[in-house]
Every structure is written in C-alpha cells, then in structure tokens.
Image 1 (cartoon, rainbow, N blue to C red):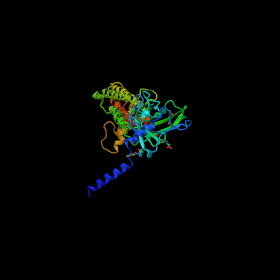
Image 2: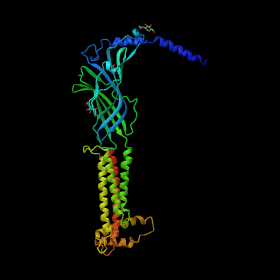
Image 3: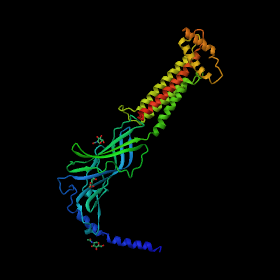
Image 4: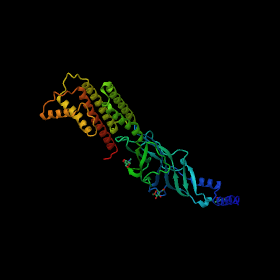
Length: 413
Ligand SMILES: *[C@@H]1O[C@H](CO)[C@@H](O)[C@H](O)[C@H]1NC(C)=O
Ligand SMILES: *[C@@H]1O[C@H](CO)[C@@H](O)[C@H](O)[C@H]1NC(C)=O
Ligand SMILES: *[C@@H]1O[C@H](CO)[C@@H](O)[C@H](O)[C@H]1NC(C)=O
C-alpha cells in the first residue's frame, strides 16, 4: 500500500506531462516562426495611430541608502512592465500546448525606460541577461531589477523626528505620449519583498502616471519617517543630562575651588555634541535643523551659567569690610526666612541664622522702610542665597527648554 501511492502518482504525472508536453522541436519552431520578420525597433500595435500602453508597477525590495548630507536616495527593487505585442501571439494548440516563451530582452521590442532624476548617471533599465516572457495571446511581461538612485532634497528641520519624501521619475526615452503611454495600474508600490530598514520606516508610497511637459512619466514617491531612537539616545538625552549637571554647579561648595573648571567642562562637552550632530546633518543653512538651535541655546545657557559662577565666586570671597547693600540683605532674608518658615511647620530644629527675633527685626525694618544696617549679613550669606535662587531658576529654564524642544520637534501643537 505504501509503495502503491508513489507509483500511482508517477503514472498520473506521466500522462499529464505526455498530454501537455511540447517537444524541443515545437519550441524551436515557435521561436523561429515568431522572430521571422520581427523588427525589434518597431513598437507593437496593429494601429500605429494609437499609443502602445505599457503598464509599470514597482516592487520595493529595500531602501539601500539615504544620505542626508549628500541628498542621495537609493532603493533596490524591480519593475513589472507589461504590454501587448500582437506579433508575438500564437495558437498554443499548433505547438503541442506551448503557452509561454522566453526571449532575451535584446532581440525583442521593449520600452526604453529610465529614471530622469538619477543621482549619478543616466542609464536605462534592464541588463542583457534579463528576459521578456510572452504568453500565447501576445501579452509581454518584463521585470528589470535595478538599484535606483535619485537626488532627493532633504528637509532636516525636525531632525531627528523628521520625515522625508523622495521622488524617482521614470520615463520612456525619446517617445511621445501618443507613441508609448506609461500607465501605473497601482497607486502605490508592491511591498511583498520589502525588508525593513534600520533607520527609515516607510509611511507611504505612491506611483502616479502623468503626461507632464509632453512626456509620459511615472512619478514614484516614497515618504519615510526616521526612527529617532538612535539620535535621542546618543545626542538628545546626553545633552539633557549634561544640562542637568550644569545646573548642579550651584550645589558645589565655592570653597572647593572646582566650580569654574566644572562648568567649563560641561560647556566643552556640549560643544562636542554640537560637532557630532553637525556631522550627521547636511551642511546647508536652509533649512537648519531645530536640534542645532537647541544645542546652540544649550551652549549659550551653559556659557551664561559659567559667567554667573565666576561672578558668584567674586561675591563669595568678597571682603566683609565692604558692606552688603540693603537690597541684597533683603534678598538674603527673604530667601532664608522663606525656607525657614516653610520648614518650621515640619521640624523643630531652628536655624541659628533665622531665629524668630531676627524675622521680627527684619519685618520691623521693612515696616519702617529703614535700611538694614544693624543686621550682619556676610557676603557668604549673599552668595549662598543667590546660589539657591539660581539653582531653581536654572532648573526651571532647563525643564522649560526640554518641554519646548519636544513640543516643537514632535509637532505636538
Ligand atoms: C494595464 O492596466 C490596466 C488597468 O489595470 C488593465 O486594464 C490593462 O489590461 C493592463 N494592460 C496590460 C498590458 O497589462
Ligand atoms: C506534438 O508532439 C508529438 C510528440 O509528443 C509529435 O509527434 C507531434 O508532431 C507534435 N505536434 C506538433 C503540432 O508539433
Ligand atoms: C511627482 O509628484 C509629486 C507629488 O506627489 C510632485 O511634487 C512632483 O513634482 C512630481 N514630479 C514630477 C516630475 O512630476
């Protein structure tokens, strides 16, 4: 029983093959007959007043390259080009059921298709080894595969959350629309063989036929979105952490003598990140990436913090022989006693500086609108108070800048 089935199958196949089998002789005959009096220079069509309709669909296989700096866009894919050539029709019964034939592309007529916006050189689609398949009704199927490159204008305003659209325009060289009419039966690409790209995610594709400027063209366009993770992890987040560290310079004790070198180091690190981003972006000023402006503002922010740190140190080490101006005294009191009052509710430990009498004294002075000359506030206290205020201001500035950055770049509003 086990061996019976394969034998039965083989017998079945033999009969089928015998019935629908064309011999070598049949195929050679067909080949010679079809190519007799065939002129591959003459376009198909019994009525040469009507244009030859050529259907073109594009199968996208992969995005090979997208270079923002040079504006080079390259895809790998193949076309499915079909037309009807009545000279290549035959009756399959005359040739023992030969339904289809393959011809080398150079000995038969085919449309001369090429991309008119290539990145480097103009070359027609199709290589010598490619073939055209004919069916017995004259239907021709040709699928030239190609690495198509085009020059693409890059808009990096929203880098790294940007979206790019690149075009590849295909035309039939040297013919008018009333001779060869290119048609796109689908409105987008076929993506059956597509393999994902690491950086770019395709959001839409389109294939549109049109006759513009007296030429029949097919306009292929790809819209793709960048996957931002790489740049967020490698540039945006590190810069934000550096900025947060930069704010912390006001926590560092001034006596350590490290404040200036610390803030200069952070400044330099941000400058390094600016260079890194610059290498990944086109060197044009129009349009500029908002990320570049963000890094620039961070650099300015960092430089201002550096400057303030230096001025703060000057205040901190100022000789107490110089009296502290009254507005600074008031500032110190406000700052210290605000935190004192807010802490008093929760804890019993009263800071030596901010005793209740002092507050009373200070408010008395305020009420009398008298200048606080008799209260001793040292320059150290002034610089401490300023440090607290500046710490909060800089943290506030940082948070606002980060929120603005994401709102603007992700177009949330
Ligand atoms: C071309 O596409 C149109 C629309 O889908 C279809 O009607 C026509 O038969 C196609 N012609 C060829 C030669 O494939
Ligand atoms: C079909 O094939 C058979 C052999 O299998 C051959 O004898 C016959 O002549 C062929 N017919 C034609 C029309 O070529
Ligand atoms: C292709 O189509 C796009 C819009 O989809 C248009 O902006 C572009 O100019 C077209 N290119 C040609 C050559 O027609």
